[in-house]
Length: 207
Image (tube, rainbow, N blue to C red; front, side, top):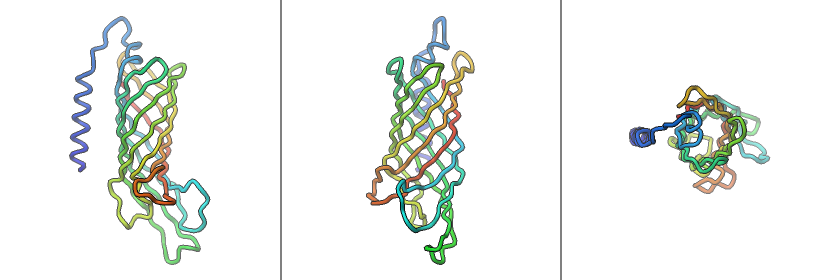
């Protein structure tokens, strides 16, 4: 499964990179902001699993560190809104701690591997700032019955705001705080699902 995913990503990257039109003209820097482009990002994250409503009893949950890496292909729609498609892999951890209602439970830390396919909508603001809203389809790779965290396969959403910084005529750096909420609409129909919630700082190379 992992080999198939890696091979697919390499194939898509190669196809898109070599299929890009050559940017020519008096201002490559202006052209890169207007034409389709690729963004590759990494992010340190903090993770937890939340109910998003009041729930009594059960184990406590603590934030733990994780990381995220993503690939996006952004194509131009107009001067204000860009649309794109993306792929993201996240490694997340959730620590469960005992309380008076958990009996002999001594605590555990769930480690989750989630891939997401998203549709990107980017709203451009002044001075290279932007806002982004991204519906996602999430698939959890390593679910088993020993995990206390519900299976995260389902529909989710990520929200972010950021800024582009010009590195040279063809490359930009983007810095982007981002919030991911997984399992908003679970595929397995839980009545009260725990939703993996991740906050990270995306650092991306745009070309």
